[in-house]
Length: 402
Ligand SMILES: *Cc1c(COP(=O)(O)O)cnc(C)c1O
Image 1 (cartoon, rainbow, N blue to C red):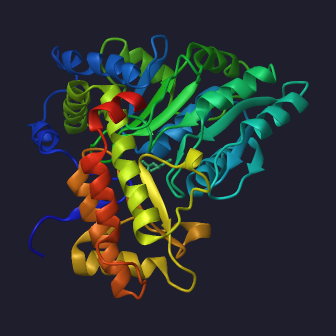
Image 2 (image 1 turned 135 degrees about the horizontal axis):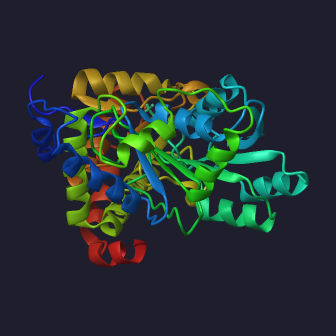
């Protein structure tokens, strides 16, 4: 098909040409004396990305799922109890992973369309008088439903319950696009991957751990620790101290990461976050005011700035919209997963993108919807979103969001 492919799934995201060029490198010896000059700054810069001074960053050659596994298996023991709200496919999968490792997961079922309830977390922790719950696992941005949870409020709820559990957060579709304040919110473990906000191909699983989490790791090793080998933080820590890895790292991805972090620094992290909010707001207005459709997120406070999950009218298959968009308009939209399969389609709006890219996604989705019989008004979403992008005082809205 002629012309550019429009990639609007919420990961993998578009890789900037600069990053593609930075990854186009001949291989080199990962044990050479110059290798640490590439790697050592990366750990420091990943810490800045999640706003921590005291945390420790780990980079695994894996996807985000590997980092999910690393955070749990390094810090917890067989049979340990953990608490986790479930409100979408990604929170479901992380819980499933925990269970398959032998953790006892206390699951809080929340509606798909809302996020973690600080009140419910508070109540469960307050009732846990003997502190049998060792960790709380929360997905910051549930990519399946386009819902963002308030991690600061979760921390406040944990404090109010005076509970010492660790706080582990999945930031795979939020880091480098939605705010994460690791030190301020005292998050103990953050997980992300390379192919979403970081604008890289998949292949890096990133974890940032607090001091408290690293102490929990030491303590776990004196009990009945979960098994891990490839994902062992201690092996990593030992090699990383001098800028090396315990096994062969993905060299092109590390060069790509350096370039992606440069791009983020040039724009400024606060501006990157504000841009995501601004672009997302245009998409949301187009969906609601233009098309008259609803988001899966039940209230504005849950709406995600990196992905919008758009409910299709009753009796229409959301998958047909996605197929049509792909086959006819060269546009990739995100599918409805599991419980919401067929009920929605998703527009990913994260990473390297701008206003016109968002308008193209709305335009293509609108044509595909009309083609499969959804009677949205032609041009309606673009009319609303483009006026928002044009007339909203971008500079001031960016400042307000920052
Ligand atoms: C994409 C995603 C994952 C899975 O990450 P992989 O890199 O595909 O392993 C986990 N959690 C969330 C919230 C995601 O969006």
